[in-house]
Length: 262
Image (cartoon, rainbow, N blue to C red):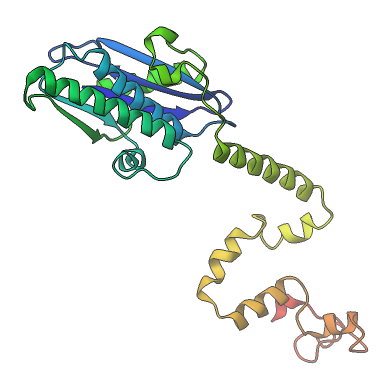
């Protein structure tokens, strides 16, 4: 059995690993780690694809010693589906290398056994399921994300050179930095306090959820009232459409009108 894992760690990097257990053994027979780089340049899906490649490398490496049913476990269903139906993604070149290596290894198994005696299967496994091999692969991935890569001579030839930067990961990192910059500027804006009393989760995520069940007219009325732009005497006086702010009903003697009275 081969357990694979790939992920990125905050403030660290992106890593992938594979751990192989042979039948009847409690401890792993082999472990591989690969550090992809900083999280701003590589994605988790890319790391998962690398972990499958490491698993395939195990099969090719031990091709003279393995027989019977061999299972490669991964908890990323998207990557497993991409193996059967490759799509134009940043990890496509890695999956292509994985499929090529798997095909070569499978053909060697068939030629060796002169029959389909060795079955190779890729299976999904629940993340953090307290399975020893799965948890060990997770620990190895954390080490890989910190930069602790296996020796180059034991890695697949495809990984002897650094992987190219992931465009999607770089775009995501850019948007996150842009979002943080916008939040800082918004908090320092003179308009921040005015909007915070309406919805402190600007750009009004709470209000956007609440208005889903309202009509456009109802939403418009609420926005006008909460922002102080409703067609009441106080607002009409401010835009010089009324001589005073006196309310004609509930606050007639006070000479003012507030939207809370509606």
